[in-house]
Image (cartoon, rainbow, N blue to C red; front, side, top):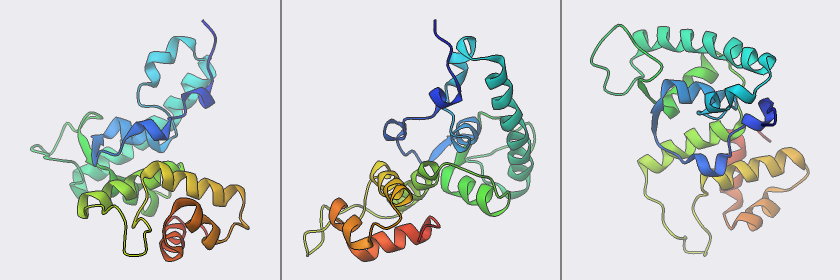
Length: 181
């Protein structure tokens, strides 16, 4: 079988889905831009890639477990010790903590997925507004819009809004929310 590298282990963000809760292990791996089931590819990984994943993963796991004990960001935690990487976390809270408190670098798609999961949980999505524009985008569309803006910074909010069938104001707010002008 052919060797795979870290780039081959990047998630297909379109197929990840947007559950509001995920095991801590998955949240950390996605924050590293690694597919949650990367271990199934382990035998085809160069040892350097395997070591790099563990080198990045283990410190994040340790910090997340310490914070979970203090901050109760786990779902339905009934105990105060023996937190494991299989305990569920609320993705939006995890991403917020990881960015604001730990200053972790994360794929923009993961940030978008957590933002969409949170907003979808709080409000129902309507098919369109009175101008015929959609009020919001899916996480895959948000990631695509953000990537388009990163690749072509001169694209105007108007062009992006027309491309995705949303309002200019929505595009501006979305880009601002993700730290992109």
